[in-house]
Amino acid sequence: MQKMGKKILVIAIGTTYPQKIEYLQFVLSEIGIKANIIPVKVESGISEQPLSKDATLKGSVNRAREALKKIPRADFGLGIEVGYHPNKQGNYEMFCCTSITDKNNVIQSCFSSRFLLPEFHQSVLKEGKYLGEYVRKNKEELNEPVTNYIRELVRGRRPLIIEATRNVLLAYLERNEY
Image 1 (cartoon, rainbow, N blue to C red):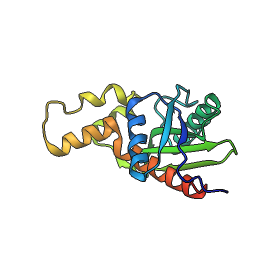
Image 2 (cartoon, helix red, strand yellow; image 1 turned 30 degrees about the vertical axis):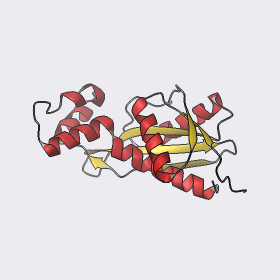
Image 3 (cartoon, rainbow, N blue to C red; image 1 turned 180 degrees about the vertical axis):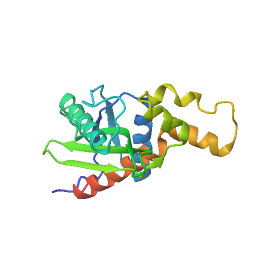
Image 4 (tube, rainbow, N blue to C red; image 1 turned 90 degrees about the vertical axis):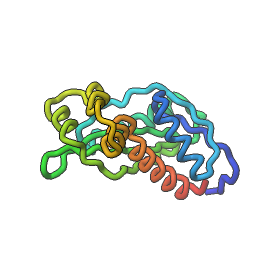
């Protein structure tokens, strides 16, 4: 495959969520890749709160595929899905899966590391409730560095999304010689 050099990529991202778009822009800038990012509202094809590694992977791939279908001029579609998976002790860990699909039916996916959720978040998930409705309320009255960091990690998911997105972009772009 021919090296792309200074080509400006066109990336269809399967979300209109501003934070995920911002995180993708951050990673592209960090790597030194110029891209035109086109946000696309798509369905993940899974539950709004995926509770397994497999469901999260499926949602990520579905988002990438649907974005590319809607923007066929894109070089590839990219899907970001945050999910939760019970560990061996039955406690939920939060993680991200980012996937890329292209016109040649190549699928590249990478997972972030996992973050063991604090007890408050465990109880919400184990009760079958939607975590997003409760995450802002957790320890709002406390202003303590560790609590503040965890609250923002669970709310914004920044480190997890950036890690999975960086890893999949590096793997895909290196493999395809961009």
